[in-house]
Image (cartoon, rainbow, N blue to C red; front, top):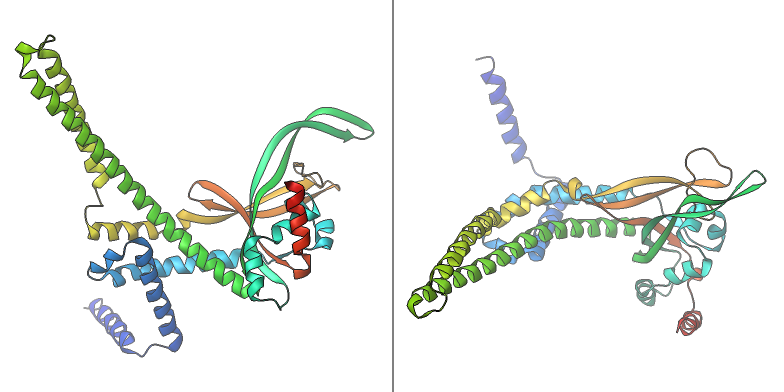
Length: 347
């Protein structure tokens, strides 16, 4: 009896809490999550709306996805200033770009130009710089005291495929847009997994149909064995082999279809894939010591090298690009005549 009363009191308090009016902040939060649920359904499969209670079932995982995406955006370090002075003095900026004009050319990308076309007036621009790191081992020269050592094995780090994304007017706007992009990416990863399963089902279904047709054709041919120079036994043996292969394909197809046989299963699968966003997308901090030639210096406090910290996107088990939040003055962008001159030189 002593255990029953506290339990009843707890249930009563929970029930009364549900009757209390929600705060304006809570109502806004729930409205945001419901809106995100509908966007997810639009992105994945609008037919999911035919499943009873789809909003209620998706609400907790979409809410978790939104919260995690916001956490990722908040974890990104403060924007790194990109200008001529920083390129000359900041080892992080210098490590990303080997020359100043290359940095300015990347900053004057098509997305930035479109953004500024609609906002001709304003201060600094904020954006995400994404690039692909490339670690390579090579033989080079090294100065040891007054002696030059040749054919020294060195590891160099360079960055390529630079892209400026999400140009914004403020850091707050940039982080909000980055969180939205992370949410869209997480949903896309979940959808990609389901689509790959559906593609596998289609492939197995096609292969099974072809094997069955071939087996039936051989069995039909074997019936006219008296008029066939090769006789019917060879056809029957091959048909039996194809029937055995068809049985294997049927088992593979059943395994591939498990969990995706209807809209209810489709929704369950989506919820399962969204339940652990931290397993799908993360930011991994990487620290390296680099000199001005982007040669990796292992350990120590070499006066000619600096510790570089960058964050690499991790999609599941696969590392993706490095991202930096950046800030840059509009004056650093290439003017149209400079950009056209660069294109003419390239051509």
